[in-house]
Amino acid sequence: MATGGDASDQQRFALIYQSNYAPIHAYVARRLRDRGLADDVTADVFTVAWRRLDDIPSPIGGWLFGVARNVVMATNRATVPDPLEIIEEALAAREADPSARAIDRAELKRVAEALTTLSESDQELLLLMAWEGLPLAQLAEALECSVAAAGVRLHRARQRLRRAVARASASRGGSTSAPSQGSGTAPGSGPGPGRERSTTGRGTLPGARRERGGRP
Image 1 (spheres, one colour):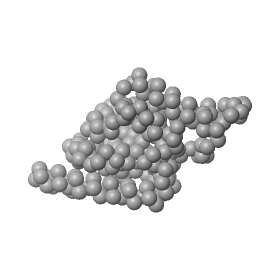
Image 2 (cartoon, rainbow, N blue to C red):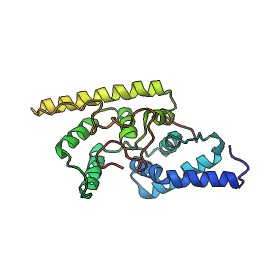
Image 3 (spheres, rainbow, N blue to C red):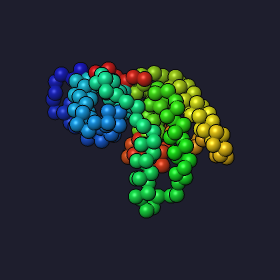
Image 4 (cartoon, rainbow, N blue to C red):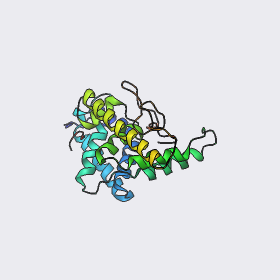
């Protein structure tokens, strides 16, 4: 626990806050769907970070997302973001950018609809990777597990998503194949191990910005 509160501690915390406030607030807001509550909960997350300043790894990686998950869950108001809403937000951002490449809106919606059929734990795992932009090593930090365990969980979640997309396509008589593990449009096909998060915090969903971590 940080107890001294000296100038170096304050400077380090200020850098952590400035670099991470926006992605953490966005994550909390998507989980709570209440802007006012999201502001308060995000403040709580950084209060925990200040109190546990000596525990924060460098680089911070996914540690702060793990804290955010626990603080969000403690509110008893947490929800898994609606993938359809996320896709709509991503598409709106993409279409507002004149330099953006063309995307298959129908295919993205099929993936989002398939995602809603998965368990909440699979949905959150895939969205942490694809939407929040956490590479595998940081995902493991957020989930408080080994990189190997996180990789296994992610692989299985991706397989279930591919099967869900394939079932949905088959039921509609469509020819669209299930997203491959390397697909750029499927949630969960984010950066591989060892890659840094993008500066925007965005994962692999076109136009996107986006089990337990450190306990408060």
